[in-house]
Figure 1 (cartoon, rainbow, N blue to C red):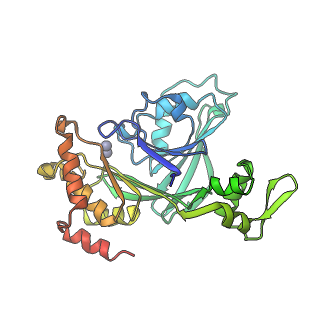
Figure 2: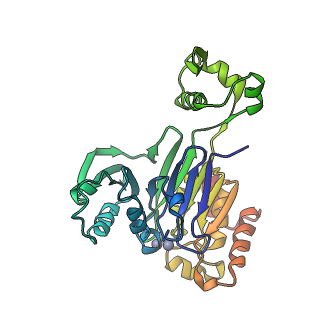
Figure 3: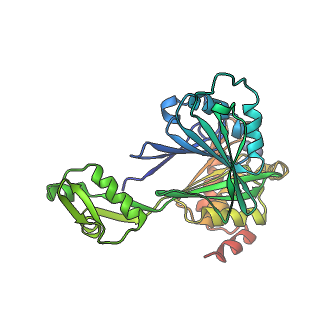
Length: 341
Ligand SMILES: [Zn+2]
Ligand SMILES: [Zn+2]
């Protein structure tokens, strides 16, 4: 089955964190974290419509300037989500440049801060020299930061001595058109398939008419049953820069539960457990334990500390041994995850 999300770390497992999640066939993309992105071609970055930042440590946020440079003269809005304080970080970056020739620009940055139980948004329009404007009333936050017609983005705050936000992107449902069935019925693929998919995702009634061709309207359910295979949507989870504590572990296991792909930081080897804890980071073994407890299908570890250069294979081996192993090494964690639905 072809998948809708195509997720890839723009700087691999050892470079700055930046996970591009492209939505295949839709010309849309999301970015989780914004480390350096100057080696990524513009064509790959232009479909980005929203960025989810874990926290503003430099290796997770220094790519903001590059994205700004790329989008500045475009008629678009860049949406950026992050923990409380991220709007000040954006304002600080914007204040570092002179904006006397942007009054005709349509571009704006919209920032949403995830603050406790609220989402608070503001807007920085280029035509007003990026002066900050409030945007709407605060909205209640109960886990979901963005609900799109195709996917939902959830966030969970983790303890990294500051808040480091973890994210999960879940597709509502996965729709596969069966080309052989279309051909057999003498129908051509076209924009009507997007209308059909859109209606299915919106959950409209079965008898809703869909225009297949001029003068040819058929009920939604008839088209669905004949041409579409519906399977549960994909899920991509992302966890970076976090302490291994019972509270964090429970939040991670809940957020990443049954993800198809789990991107999890593994900066340290277990032999440097104390160092990892002191720096509020995970070890590879802890990443593996979290992935196993969350019941994910695939684990992708990344954000390796350069201290292990030449030994990165050991990080992978440690994480995957724990992920696939049966030995219960984190009794506390396993008890908590067992209690989850
Ligand atoms: Zn950090
Ligand atoms: Zn980091």
